Structures are given as C-alpha cells and as structure tokens.
Image (cartoon, rainbow, N blue to C red; front, side):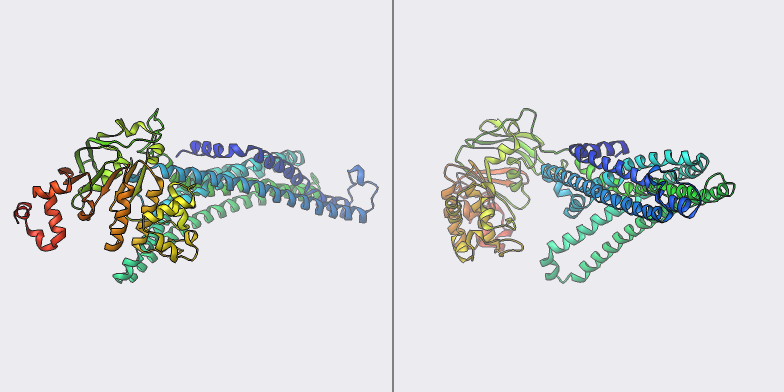
Length: 601
C-alpha cells in the first residue's frame, strides 16, 4: 500500500470526528502560544532581577526586585499549569478519537471477513486473522494520533518558535535548523528497513497465535497421543522467533531514535557555542541566550517528535498493509447487481448439470442434476468424499458452482440476495456448534425474537426437554465452552431445535443423527419426520437406516449420481446403494463383496 493511499484511508476514518479534531487543533494553538511564553519568566529573573537591565513590561516597571522575582516565579507556575491542563485535554480528545477510529476499522474488517467465502476461511489460519483484527488494527490510531496529529501540532509550534527566534537572533536560528537536512537523509536510509522488519515481526506474531490456537483447539488429541512435549517445543520455538523479530524491530527503532537525538544535540551544542560568543561580544544578553536556548529546545521538540514518530509510523504501516490485504480481497460469494429479496419461497429445488471442485482442477461434483418439489424429502448418500455435504453447501451459496446452476422456485438462486436466500433455509450442520451463550439464545439464533413457547416446542421436537429439566436455570443456563458442558448428542439436538424454530421452507440436515445414540436417534427422527412435513428437506445421511421414509434417495459416488430412487427401489436393484446398506448392516466382512454378489445373496 502506498503512503498516499494509507493517509487517504486514515483521513477517511478521521472525517466523522472532524469536530473533535478541530477542537484538538485549537488546543494545540493555545499550547503553542504558552510554549512561546514559557521561557520569559526565566529571562526576567536573569536580566531584570539578577542583572541590571531595565524591565520592558509596562505592568512590571513599578515593582522592586523581590516583587518582580515573585511575579516571575508565579507566572512560570501558571504557565506550566495551563500547559498541563491543555495537554490533558489534548490527550483525552486525540486518544478518544483514535480509539473510535480503531473500533470503526475493526468493525469494517470483521464485517468484511464475515462476507468472505468459506473457500477463503479454509485457506486461512484463525490465529493470524485474530492478530490482524485485534492487534494490527491499532495501526490506524498510531498513524493518526502518533503520525498525522503530532505533525500538525508540531508544525504549528514550529512556526511560532521560528518567528520568535528569528527576531531574537537570525544567525543562531539558521544554525539551529541546519540539522534538519541531516535528519531527512537518515529517514531515507532507514525507513525501508524498519518497515521490512516490522512486517516480519507481525507475520511471526500471527504464526505464534496459529500455533497456540491449533494446540489448544485440539488439546484432547494432544493429550490422547501424549504430544505435550512436541506441542510445547513448537510453541516455545514460535514464541522465541516472534520475540526475536520484535527485539530486532525495537533495536532498529531505538538506534534510529538515538541517532536523531545525537544529531539534535550537535545542533544544540553549535547554537550554545556561537551564542556564547554573541554574549561575550554583547550582541545579545545572557538572558536572551538562555531564552533562545529554551526556544531551541522547544523548536527541536516538534522536529524530534516528527522524526521519532516516523519510525512508529513505518512500523504501523506494516499493520495497515496486513489489514488492507484482507480488505482488498473481493468476496467470492456476493449479491449480483439487481439481486432481489426472495420473500418466503415455496421450496422447489433443482440442480441443473452442476459441477464444482474446491480445486477447479479436481472436481468434487460432475454434472449433478435432480429436482425436488415443495415439501419433498431428498436424501443424499454415498461414501466419504463423494460430495454429499458439498451439495448442501452449494444450495446455501457457501460456494458457487463452476458449471450449471441451482434454482429455487424456477429462479437461479443467484438472482436472490444472499440474506433473503439463507433466511429461507434452515440447516443442521456438522460438527454441531454450540455458542458460549444461554441455551435460549443458542436455540433462537435464527429467530432472536421467538417466544418461549415456540422455543420450548422446538426443544421438545428435538428431544431437549429432559436436558432443560436438568439445568439449574433451564433455558437461561449458559452452555458451551465456559458454561455447562453438553454432550455431543445434546449439542446435536440443540442444532436440530435451532433448525426447527427457524421454520424455513427448505431444511438441510447434514448427518443429523451422527452424534446420537440409538434411543435418542429414534426419538429425534420421529420428531424430525413430523417437522419435515411441508418443507423441502435435503438430508445428508451416513446411517442409511434413517432415510427409509425419504421420497427420493440420491446415491453419490465419485462426484456423480450413480443411482436414484426410493429406499425399496434401490434395495431391490442390488446396486451400489444395496451394497452400502448391507455393508453397514453386516459390518466389515461384507466389504470384500462386490455389489453384484450382495444382490445375489
């Protein structure tokens, strides 16, 4: 990302807070005026109280030396007090604006990530995305509040100091500013190195989060296979690499900062040396040299701040680049121009010669075609990897087919807006996901405003009432990670209740009973069969015994529909479905028998 584009983005996020920023600039103007006045009490003490120079201020000419000394000291305290109050106000305004900008930036990035396709999320590590959302987004605050705003305030202060110093001694002023070109040469030589090191450090930080996330999310596997030492070693190595990269970044930044300070010290030494010669020659007074040196410090302060913050901006630029790398990715699944709101659909589903592959060179589905009338129950079966779940994902537009099309009610699903399409589809997916919220919220995730009666009815259909009765707070019990732990079967029933409550015209059930015992499966399937009435249902089935009542069964193998028919028809044919059914019924010994042999037996 170019520097120009980066600052355009920063100013775009700053624009909603232009009023606050204007007040912050006003505070800077007042602060600059006080900075200009700050050295004068000391000049009065040196030249007018300790020295013999007459006071030029009309209001102080009648004061004796004691009163003048007390007035100068009081004035100094008042100036510093006012400056402190203005500094607190400035920090509050700028930090609050910076935090709001970070929140806006995070919100935009998070919303964008939610619109990116499942293909994108399959390719990305969660840990790295978390670093970008939570850590890299602070870059916009760093650039705005440690880059843009300090430069503006520094230029205001610099202009004020320059005008005052030129009037005191033009030669000393030019000598003091002679160090600025040297600082520019330093920036040109080191800025690229800082950005490169910062980018590497951010990447290693993301890798560390990935390692920790993988290990902790699979802790049961790690413990079951006694992989704790290897997991620990991988984490420590990644942590050391990340810390090492950050150490290199801090070292370069510190070296840069120290070099800036040395160059500024050289400029200060030259001014003091030549200024002392001017005092000896009586070109200026000692008080004027002191005040000039104080102004020089105030002149160098904004220059130093601008050059010091440049290193921080270069580091933050790496974070901004990582965020905009994601924002520049166009969602693969998005609304077509002119996409319409679907309303409530009838639920006639048709696949027309649909082909798809997660890798286009390796198709998962090849020329899939079938129709389902409203209210029909379609089961999809086949061996692992045949493409069963892919059919469900394509219907919900988690992916786009690479050939053919999918229609609902005779219209291409891409003609509907994504939101309205998915509002017409209820899903029970694998693995069952239970959020760390109340059981009520988990069931009502598709209908947040559902009544308690509707929630309990859906829970009853899914066989959840005994579970609710055991919970101390019933529906208001927090479940999931950090709350009440549910078994895999109970979690599955929560997802089924969630789909029941949504009351969508199309229902997708991906292995709905895979985590249930036989008794619970019988209970749930009885309720599910009742709930299927009037809804077009697509059931992805592993247990073939659960789909005997399906209106039609599609048998997938190697990306093709190898067979199609009712349960009885497919069994009577003695083909691939019959082979799979007998294999499940008899167990592994039948695996060696060909479909034709099964049919004859």
